[in-house]
Length: 125
Image 1 (cartoon, rainbow, N blue to C red):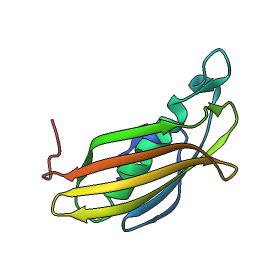
Image 2: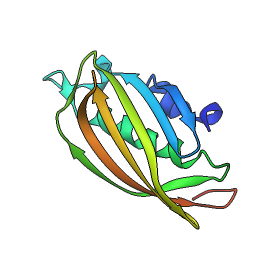
Image 3: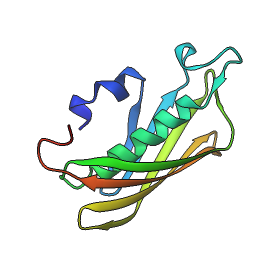
Image 4: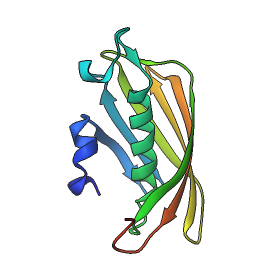
C-alpha cells in the first residue's frame, strides 16, 4: 500500500512500525496544514485516518474504511510531531474495527474508532 500511496507521502507521513493489525505513523504539522491560529484538527484527522488505513491493510487483503468516529481532544499545532498508533480490535469475515490514538509528546490529542471492510481486487468505485 505504501508504494502506491502518494497522499500519505505528500503529507510527510512516515511508517514507524507495521505488523498485522498494527501500524504506527508519524508526521509533522506543516504551515500548509494550520489555520490563522497556527492550529488545526485536520492534521490529527489525517494521521488517524491513515493509521486506520494502514492497520486494516496488513493482512494481504485490500480493505477500505467504512466509517470513522473521531474525538478531538486538542488541536495539532505548527511543528508538532504527531504519532498515530493504530491497533486492531476485531477482525471477522470482511469487517474490522480499529482504534487509533494520535499523540504529541505522549499526550493524546485525538482518539479514533474506525470500521473497515475488505473489498475485491479492484476496490471501491
